Image (tube, rainbow, N blue to C red):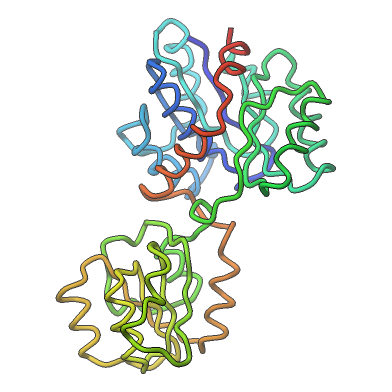
Length: 318
């Protein structure tokens, strides 16, 4: 079976999302699949290791959870050529022409191009792959832009295998990333630190703790001043992933005991900043986060399944 290389010209364009979604769709169609992630040739490569760890939860994902060297990828591609399992390899960011030639791989080029100019440049890069190109997958596209983006690729004679809309959960940071961005102290460590937070909710200035305000969203981090016990307890009743306490001062011991004793999934962070600055820092995280956690895997598969053009893929694969 051929090897499929998932590539992008720039980092953070959605290669892992596409690898996860494609693997799941192919397994559902009855194909045997193996998935791997290539790491940089020298030194530590934390992004690649993070991606490889996430792909463990994907159908066909490696059980080791470790990124592989290019030499390992070459060995796997040779094995795949004579085997029944289709090998999907997520490449390092950058032009994939040389690696595709060494692997003897077909390429899916992933692009999150936000406008026609950048998408045209990506389409040109895709065309340069010649017969190696299977097609392109577009990611993080505003819903209103999807028809125009597909039309542009069609005019450039580049096959569009899928066009994925923007998604808040896939763009969302994990609780761990929230803590790192805020330089926050962990007062309580919960069980969902690597799961994505879809919403950041700011506690209202005045609120009845019994109101349904915090019930508007499921996956969330709630931001309140350290001394707003009424809002902390109201938020806890709606099972947030994280409480972010602002102001840098120690909250009530009762709150910490309550969380530690009865809310194992909730992390409590203490931000050294005031509430306004804390929310500004968190807002800047969306769209710049790693692919991690079961929530993102499930959403990636759901989105890809709904947009994947399987007939175009099979025709291109031959």
